[in-house]
Image (cartoon, rainbow, N blue to C red):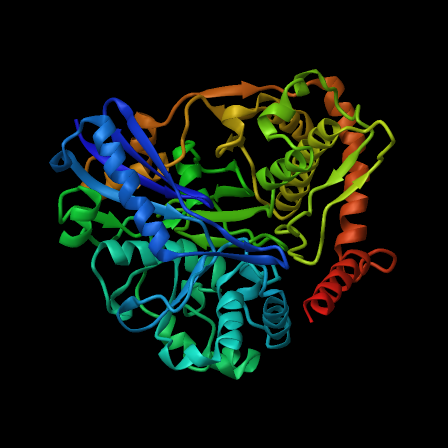
Length: 527
C-alpha cells in the first residue's frame, strides 16, 4: 500500500485527492477561491496567488482528516493547474499582481501582433502552435502586463505559469532562476520548442515590442517534463498543508493534460476534457503539425510521447449562462433533455460566447444562435448549445484527421460528462463513433499518477493507469441521430468559417464589429 496526494487547480476551486496504489481513490476535498471579473470589461479574469495557496492548504488538511491517513504515510504530491495562467513576479518570487487567468482575453491586440510578426519574420515555432498565437497564451499576457503596468516594470524579475509558481512556492524556492518550468506549459503556450533552440530569439521578441527586451533571459532556464522533480516540500508548507516535509513534487502540467492521463489516454486517443471550457488532448505517435491547433509538444501529456492540444473556449460557462438568464441552474434546466431528439429545436448554436480557441484561434467572436421562434425555450437553447459544442468538436477532429492525426478512441472526461449522459450521447451521435466515459471521477487522478511515479511506486505511466484508472461506460452512436447531425454539421461548418474568418468577405467583420461598437459604447459611458 502506498498513498499519494493529487492536486488539481480548476478555474473556481482546487481539488486534493488521496489515492492508494491498491485501493484507488480514498478521499477528496475541495476549496474554492474567487475569480475576479469586471462587468465593464468582459475580457478581464484574474486570480490571487495567495487565495490559491490558502485554498490548497485548506483542502489538503480536510482530505487528510476525512481519509484518516496519517500525514507520514503520504509519499508524494503532484499538481496541475489551468493554463495559460500567468503571473509576473519580482524579487523572491513575490507576485507583482494577480494571475492573468487562462480565460482573460485582454491581450487580443498583443496576440495579433505576435502572430503577424511571427509570419513576417518566418518564425518556425508559429507552425507548431497552429499558425496563430492566442490571447490565452503566455507572451500575449506578459506583453499586455508590461504595457499596462509601467510603474512595476523596474521590479519585474520573471513570469511564471500557475503550475510552476505553485510548485516553486511549495518547494520553498525563492530564486526565479532555480524554478523548473513545465514543457507542457511552455511548449503549448510560450513558443518554446527544444528542437528549435528553446524560446523565440531575442531579436524576434524585440521586433514585436521593445518592452520584451531581456524577457527571454528572464524566463529561460531549465525546462522539464513531469518525470522530473520540481523539488521537495518545504518545512513551512509541510506545516501549512499538514504533510511530511521533504516529500517529492514532480514538475507540474496543465489540468487537461493530466486529466487525459487520468482518463486512461494512450497513443492515438483523443480526450475531450469538458468543463468550464473544453481541452481536446491527444497522444500522437508522429509529429503532425495542424493549422489552428494549439500545439504539438514532445513530453507535454506523456513524458515520452508527443502531445497535441486543441479546444473550445467555453462549454460549461455557456450552459451556466443560459441557465442564469433563465433564473435557474444547469442541473435543473437539464431535466427532460433526455427526451429531446437530434435537431428538434430548430436551433443551430455556434458556441463562440468566449471566442474561438480552435481552429480559427479568434477571440473576436461571440455566440450565434440561428432558428429562434416565439415558442423557443431556454431548455431548447441548452440542448442546442450541447449540440453546438459537439459540432465544434467535430470540426476540430476533422481538421486533425486532414493533417494526419489518427484517432483510435474518443474519451469524454472532465467534470461535465460524469453528470450528463445526454451530452455524451449527443457527442457520440455527432462524431459518429463510440464515446467512452470513465465510470469514476478522474479529476486529480492524473496528478496522483505522476505523484506515484515521483515516489517510485510505479515505473511507467501505463503501469499506473492499468492499476488505478476506472473502466469506461460506452455511448454508441444512433443511426437516425447521426443522419440528422451529418446534415446539421454541413450547415454548421459553413456558418463557422463564414462568420469566423476575419477575411470572409460577407460576414467576417460582423462579430468583431459588434464587439468594437460595444467596447466603444462602454468607454463612452465610463467617461
